[in-house]
Length: 414
Image (cartoon, rainbow, N blue to C red; front, side, top):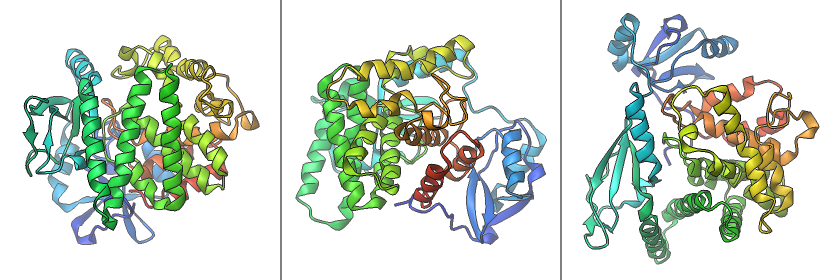
């Protein structure tokens, strides 16, 4: 797969070396930025990131005084040096409100399943640069055949949430079709099928957070993920949504569940505790189902009141799940404590050190990492390598031994 190695194979002759001081503070970068470390080139900053003092300090801490861009982007470097580039967020509050409204009624799907020659009975949309465009007009009464050039390579591919049952049937059909083909290289697709099923289920959970049947199904998905990862640890790369997608709570929930299970396996957790960790981590943000969308999707900085409302999601999630007989009591720390920090600077209770349970510590690392590597309207995604640098820099906030293991686990991810 494209994301099985974080080392970027870039011929040195294609790169142009520039002094770190040429990166301008508080301006978005118009190009990807690479660093050289141990003889290899690694992408450190994604295009569009607003370069800040904190980012500069991290480079200095690593004793990096030169970075690299592609030779072909010298023109962008010149323009970047001479004028202020536009911010990454939408400038018009009205446009952003419209974007948030339409996005809330859409659901991100996996483009690899839209195979040329297959017919779909649901409409398909493209989200790119905050613009949502219908690219396939279809319904059960009007099927549409996918062609080679139907689905663009860039942007998020979406369907209307009302069409989720149709997409679910489509995924099940593909899964049965794969079962008839005993080819080894179909393993990746099988893993992605499980990931897609988990995403759909998490959408249903967030829509009906009090459904015991949905919680039970999450447990079944967690068991499937554990089975796959115990048998083949590298399957974590197929089970994660690692590409530069926009932020969706259901994708974030699945990613945090998979990352937490992976870390649990790495530290030698037994099967029973892996299950308790996995179901807690997968449902860690269920409380966000009780937070108003206009606050969750707000562009830019939250007011103190809005931030206090957001912080309530951990307590609300705890209240929802402690009443569910399908949810293990031992899993509750993953929900209630994933924003606590060992330094005592977290919330909701400002717990310190050993007051934070192991499941809370693991989920906190997975949650923080996935949030940093996810694109938001007001910021591009951080590269995995740089995101880990940020997490490590938060000294005293995360369990150092768990963090070391987490970094080793993600050593192959770009």
